[in-house]
Length: 152
Image (tube, rainbow, N blue to C red):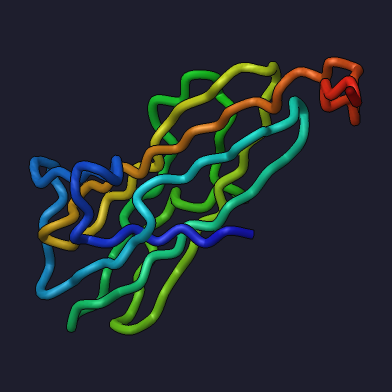
């Protein structure tokens, strides 16, 4: 299981983005630490369940509130948050962490893209979007073990 945590100080190279134009108001000195900035499922097999964990740590002096966590812009409806998590607000006390388990199941061997969107009370991270991607495993050519070397 891979842990995903996004750093507040992420730059454009990470793919992580946040906006402050959402109707959620910051409360006190709440702060979140989330890293790395994206979640990639590589060589995913069709019909197989994959899971990776997103971890969020409260680093401010006040409670961090994660109002919602949801999968958005899912190009193939392949991603979901396990057990319906993220539908209700979660409060994380300073120094504590919480996590969300992101599932992937490809229904066909095509690349998939989405974002995990988090709404929080962190003034610098009201809405965070963590890019999610999946690339299918290469097709089986039936030539397992053949390296192409003729032995000459």
